[in-house]
Length: 301
Image 1 (cartoon, helix red, strand yellow):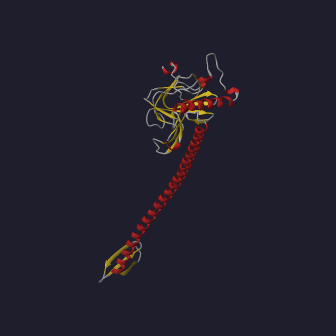
Image 2 (tube, one colour):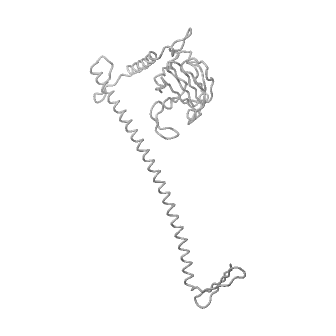
Image 3 (cartoon, rainbow, N blue to C red):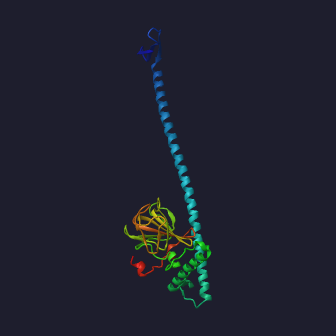
């Protein structure tokens, strides 16, 4: 198809076209203003299409942002409700505990209570330490008497049942984080920390806090290189973020034996040991099992 065009007369344009080489040639005239209107209409149509596409794309992005914000808002509300309930629970427990302390001070004046501000009684430090020690021993006794007899380890000559209960520090160093709610140092989220962190240089020895059998030595995304020891009687201890293992699964270890080295494997901000105590598959506060035995057998290691 061949198209020719030429201006004829004033304000008119002649358009000729021919289909095929031997086809009949056709022509028609078109006013110049009509051609201008046609071009203007096509330009307007193009601009309108681009504008509508831009509006649609912007609306889609805005809707996606709104949905994301709604989801985040729901999550934040859920967290806020959880934290509010947790704070209320802690406040009620503290309030009930203080009431019991006040009742004990009034009904048992022979106990060593100290009266503080607003007639609130508190334990003297020495009595508080004794009570914490008694609570730890009572918890140990309850576990021992509740377990079946075949769960109690068979002791050989020279061994003691206390050797199978965690009771020493797993490493020397500075306690950088304790048991309880905290803001995670990497994820920057509020979480419950189910253990004790002891910071020290990489390569610092890590000690078994009780005798037992090495249950596993493996790598876990969060803990990094970790060791889990089964001590019997429902007790297990976990040692995380290690640099290396010095024992293998199935090994028998004694209290105070070096089992690994402090490191920073897994999700960690620096060299430290993450230490946990499990009692009947429940994570418990390790502080209750840190008695700092000063015997040369352990202190010299």
